[in-house]
Amino acid sequence: MGRIAAPFGIKGWVKVQSFSEDPGTLMDFESWRVGRGEQQTQYTVEAIQDHSNTLVAKLVGIDDRDAAYALRGQEISVAKSDLPPPEENEFYWSDLIGLKVVNREGVELGKVESLMESGANDLLVVKGTREHLIPFVAAFVGKVDVAGGTIEVDWGEDY
Image (cartoon, rainbow, N blue to C red; front, side, top):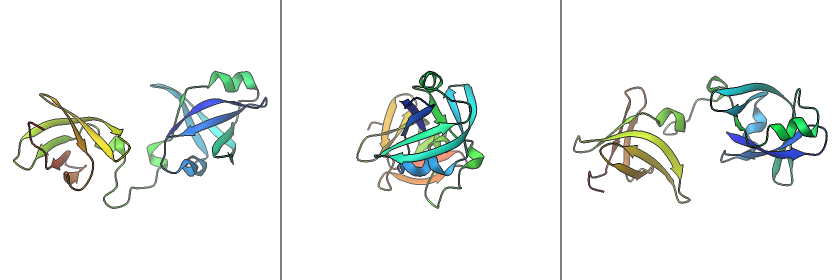
């Protein structure tokens, strides 16, 4: 959902770079997981503020600049159970990763390895016999069946 960018002040506050469309989304959670990969620590958010278009936060147990500096560059995540359910035709990226991608002719193009932002729209990164970058827009993406593990796309094998 974001990352710790840098210390802020001398009392343990940190600047936060949000990866959400709405940076204030992180303000809705009472605790964050901070770390890299599997090495994450749960922190209670003591205070959080919008400060000149940047979020700054104070985490319980991070009480000086050195402790804040040690968190620099680490990712912020929250438990999936703490997230609201997605609206209709909205998906969490993590739910799409690993889904099988099949075109309208029934040809399997591969599986969603990741997603990326391209500026104009998000792209599905599909790995199969070759890599496909498929815009995640209604013109190319038909039915998304998370429970069934598939995404139907209007995309040729040779695109």
